[in-house]
Length: 426
Image (cartoon, rainbow, N blue to C red):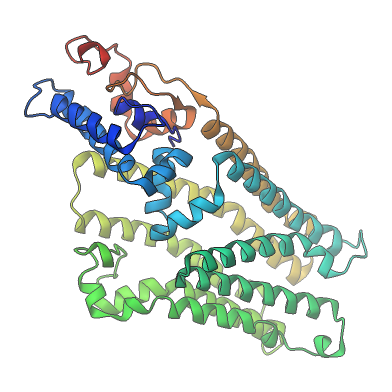
């Protein structure tokens, strides 16, 4: 990803501290110079497109602030990713990339401690209470609740209030779980597991209520034509009911899993613990099918150019590989845990080995990625646009070459003076 925060300024040939008038003036000059109708150079069209993109961002004060903090890819992540229209509030709170990297690394380290504490507690190596064992989870959830609550107050948006409610339900569940495990009071020791899971019921109900729009026929009919209702999920060929099923599938499988778990813990049934793992295995395997169906729905219903289709296919292939890579240790962990609980076949430390491996790989990957996006690196021979070659980071170069291998091969040849659209022919 390209987190360079000066490239758009270089494209418009203005300093980073320029005024809005300077940006408009420079854009007019460059737009006339590189407009395809006025400039026969084949590379002029691409240069004009890049200049227009830079002007679109820098001419908007709010988007310019985000770009100055996170660069082009960071801006796209906040605007088009999970945060959507609430990106401005989140980005302003997060501050610089270095701060985000430091906070993320600390949170990851705290998360690593949680399974370690569970193992040493279960083995009897320490006589801690379960409240102490859950201390890493308490810290992380407390930070998340404070963060989302502050965003809710700052933005006054319903989305952040719902996020805060989600996190409060999770924290409440953790409190009831710890009380049940420690049996600190008579009430806690006699509490049914079905009562411990009440916050989980509320969490699932809130998640379903949050998706109220999917029940609207207008939302379904306009999901490919209106940006306001855009949703490319598959409908399994079943029309509107199939679309509703797809959107609620995760909540339905979660309900299935927790119902099985509660009736097993409360000894309503005496089946093997392997039965309880069925919902998890089902969702992991079926989710791979869902990824393919959702992508097919998107490709068949949204207009795309060939380059965009190729890029989309590359990204989806990469996501499939990542998902499979992450789910293999999860499947191993669930299998070992079921075997441990059912017949005590494996030591608890061995059960958590897949989790430790995943957390270790994620920590290494996070460190490498953070170093790549923060520390810049020159990318000679690439992206020759007006204003000279911009400074790019290593992750941007890798991303460019993975998504567009043909461009990478072309970039190995030095551009000739007749096709270059740099400062030399300005």
